[in-house]
Image 1: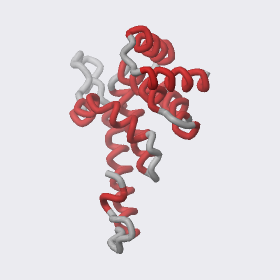
Image 2 (image 1 turned 90 degrees about the horizontal axis):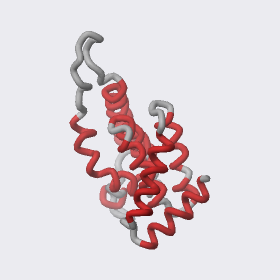
Image 3 (image 1 turned 90 degrees about the vertical axis):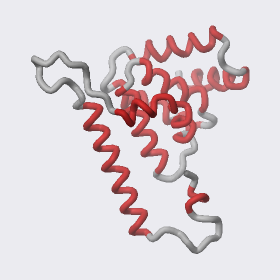
Image 4 (image 1 turned 135 degrees about the vertical axis):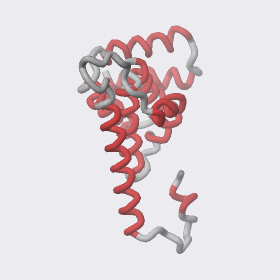
Length: 166
């Protein structure tokens, strides 16, 4: 939610600094818990061939990947740091396609250098856990361009951003 929804412009109802700090701590703890779930979601033992345990929150978030990328690119205060971290966790959780899709979406939606800087940062986070991410992301890029699924302005922005990154 934009800060203006929580605190009206010029309003005297700004949250107390202690409340902000407590909320910041709570979000960090939630992200830490998600991180543990993502990286330790394998079977209970080596002899147990069960599939990795699902993380329902991340499962439901997969369909909102574009919204999460767009919100992250708004670069609002601490929020974009949390969202960027969440994008990384979602990418690892839904690998290989989710990670490649997140990178491609950031490339398509970024409108300036500060926003575009999030792409290599996310790539660094994801590539530490995932192999073959760059070829998967490039294949996704080429597939979108060849399929003509992007509106022309978005295709142009995407190509500019890709050229800047390369």
